[in-house]
Length: 402
Image (cartoon, rainbow, N blue to C red; front, side, top):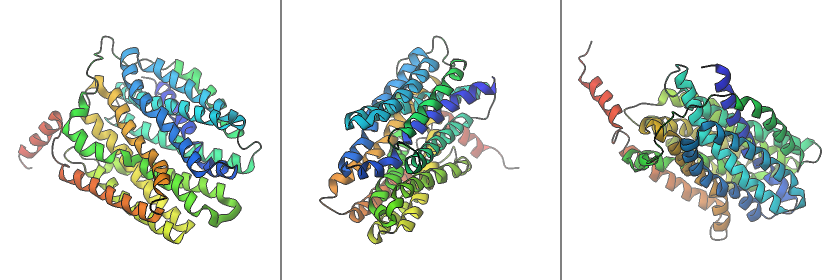
């Protein structure tokens, strides 16, 4: 298998992730333009409304029609979404439409792109899990670079509500021709029924499910909520500070991902547990940052939450690959990311609850919720292992020493 094929698929994941996160650091810009906090958070959450159904449909469609046509549709959706967002100067409806279509493009990148890259790496003879790790790395790098470039262009470039999106559109056009050349990996005659059977597995429900919403829930707290709480303390640099929080979260998430592989164990959920132990710690620092309204403390919280995000993302994918049958992988990856992206609704939820309790109280409540999820995963860390994994563990335990 040519490395160029894998690179093209990873580039598609990267460019769709870029498009998915270029809007986030610009939340401050839209607030300054006169949009309310609720409207801005709703626009952020509108992306999830397009993304969750897209994740579920993309996985099953890729099983029926193949990886390449569905991935191409996702990259085209990402291109169209940026053009719609660039038309946002004509009204908020264009922005909402762009965010919905963006969600579909990112959905395909995560569900189908990750599966396609995994299968191409397997065919090339790479170690198990290599494709998932590379896909997670490109996803996070795309999120980070998209936010960094968009924030920088909005701060210093011309037409700040248009230029960032046009840059992404041009990048997407450059990727498309290479994707046409990547080979199809869906086996002919592979089954298309029962693709979500793994969702009923006890380990999915008791280990993966309690962790998954915190993947992007942690990111949402770091770079969607914290800039709103402390951004006024940095004056005219609020847009640049928001970009720094976004990029800092995602760079930390990128750098920590190799650690997730080293922490991963087939016999336990150790890596998932580590991520869930970091999660309440980062939320606790966020709570104190909200109390004292400290930009420096908010940045520390963002880095801690970024580390939790990076380990959770990779460790969940590795757990999922051990659970999924080959014909289920795309659909279950889509379901996994759909659960993960529920966390992106946190800013909208907290905005609504802010009239009842302040952000420090709400963030403290999130600490307790995260701890309860950690406790559940701890109880089931070594139980309900997939049959083939359990057999390997038993064989190792029974093997004579020496």
